[in-house]
Image 1 (tube, helix red, strand yellow):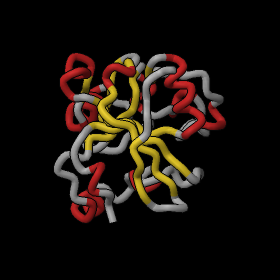
Image 2 (tube, one colour):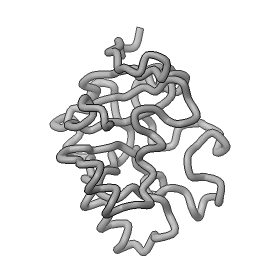
Image 3 (cartoon, one colour):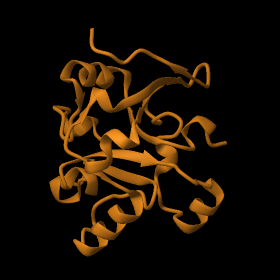
Image 4 (spheres, helix red, strand yellow):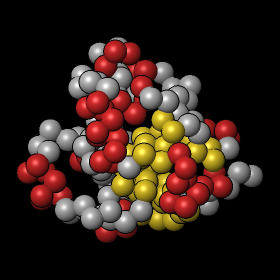
Length: 165
């Protein structure tokens, strides 16, 4: 069942360890120093990197109005369940909600991102239609609205502190 907490809002998900790097850097970087081996969708090399990465953006989810049954029927190859509620390779995930008004000038919504993917003929690059959106450039911590940790052990979201110490 889809987590209600994610149903509205714009979200970025990451690992607990990477979240520490985000806090240390003062924000989410579009291309952080993470080995490609530890990234999603990089096995085919740079030509096949996810579309959002190729445009210098941070991948985010916008689940506004999301209905998983309808979505799965329309986009059966989407990999959203790999990430929700927790990336399948992790025991815990961090979910960062972004303040819509704070990112408005750098935000590309899901439908516009999908259209750009088609127009740029980047069909070999991964994208999660409609629900994947993008933030062009670095996302500052000041744009964070709320941060949650999801634990597969507890199967619940717990709000955590996100300010740099």
